[in-house]
Amino acid sequence: MPRAYIGLGSNLGDRATFIESAIAALDATDGVEVVAQSSVRETEPLDAPPPSYLNAVIAVETRLSPRDLLATCQRIEDALGRTRPYLHAPRTIDLDLLLYGNVVMDTPDLTLPHPGLSRPFVLDPLLEIAPDLGLPPAP
Image (cartoon, rainbow, N blue to C red; front, side):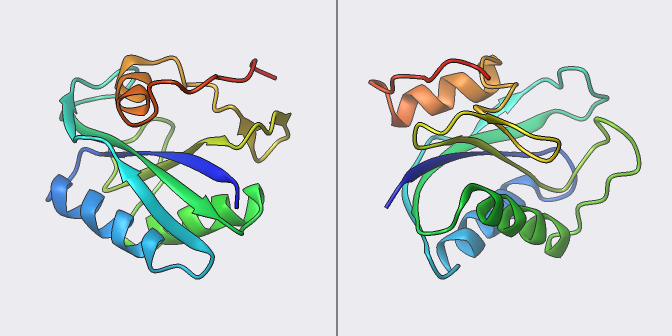
């Protein structure tokens, strides 16, 4: 099964519980198994208003396609109360598909690797759980 990496972030409400709930929901999804989790870090918002975020990255092994995994992440966000009133709005949970195996793609609904992969609040926890990860070139 391909290995994918998902970034998690929350800056509203019980941030830690939202992250834990999202991880549990992914792990309970048929065809998805969480195999690694970074530590959770508190970070200042970047290109977004306060409050600060909790961020983490998980690795999953999955039988889902990249688009199906993205759709699963979006359903979990919706179930956990995520709204999208404007770009970079505060959120209960944000799930970003960062990498999916060695897939490189750039479509209107999904870009892999994720364009924000080099941001420290993404890259640092990613490298914590996958220190030898060879990152594919950006699309």
